[in-house]
Image (cartoon, rainbow, N blue to C red; front, side, top):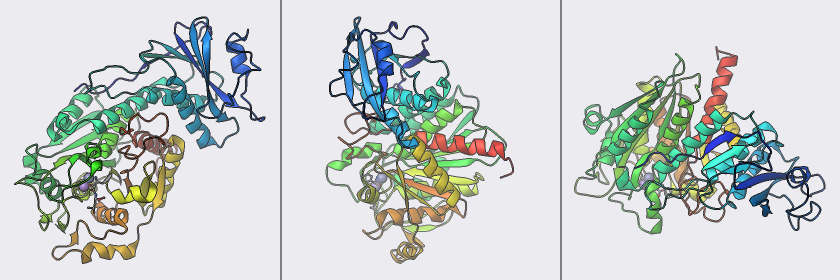
Length: 504
Ligand code: BES
Ligand code: ZN
Ligand code: MN
């Protein structure tokens, strides 16, 4: 497997925007106060009106996704609308990502070079526009015959954008997409661990440690061992340490079920093919760590990636099994399809008690119930910590990765204990409130540390998103790499806050 798919190369071009060494030019256009396109950019680029007279743009209103295109001097020029100039800030950033994504999709596949005219935009808007264009160029290439990405080389007509940031983030998302969409037999747990090792081998601020099956058994990771033992490809836990300071680390835990068949409680129905992406949580953590390792973030971060295959076999764990988790909690297995909470429960407890994390965030494609509640585009945020909630929601507004707060209802905790005939708690219970059940189950393993659980079963997988997904998501309902930008943004904000007031 070619890991990872490389994004297009980005370079600064400060020459004449009408004469770039490129076959195509994409121009974002804002909509003015009169509801019409702000035509000054167009006038600059097409002064003699060869494309069309600036007064005659047909139906082009510069709304998001609105396209007007033609050829000038043999070059394709695409005007792409990015919506109102006075739009609310987070909406404007999202409009820029979507507008540029739609714009570059007009460019011929395999285009060697494309100029993005970003010089008239606010700098932050321009950065997001560029990110949108690059994300839209992603193709799942690693396993397919055709190696046709959309763009090869992207030029931008200004030199003041933080291209290091853009590249780091976009590479992180590409990496997460490659991993989340990989077919299970290309990326069984041990292979995934090798890939992570290989990826970070040249980054000296990152250390990778792999807990193999024997060690997991020896050290009592009962959740990971039980879920993983049904497959001949045994489970592992990968621990990735990013060192940016001397403080306690932030722990990021990612559900990494390479394939979730449901196990003995076998899944039925067509949605099972999406379960290759039941590793989207882990994929996002790997992508985020990749990005921050290139950004010299000033805090410590540790990623925990428990990786398993959940399949039925003569060696599988069974409904009615009684599992002793890493922290000693005794869990009755009432459903082998509620496997995610067993593997990340172990990892969360390990982060809290063995790694000295000062806060823990997990990303997990945990429940179908959260998709019923929030649909395919929105992840559910479960936390009791007000600061974590506010900061994660702020990162969500900034990145457009949709997140919505969900309740941690104390009265529902009774479900966990009452559902178990033996042991402390049952891994699955009621049909109602399933996403909250999962969150309350996981919370027990955080041992009082500030903790947030993000259920990404919807946007993590791309499941049911066809037709309504943002234009910078991959085509054909592939996993979009949700969570990478959210986590990077969250961590960057946290690092700069700590820098400003080191004591808090
Ligand atoms: N990976 C699934 C969750 C999922 C389901 C994600 C559908 C996306 C679409 C998870 O492991 C699972 O199977 N959860 C069960 C839990 C239940 C048995 C308590 C579910 O949601 O049905
Ligand atoms: Zn699962
Ligand atoms: Mn499952």
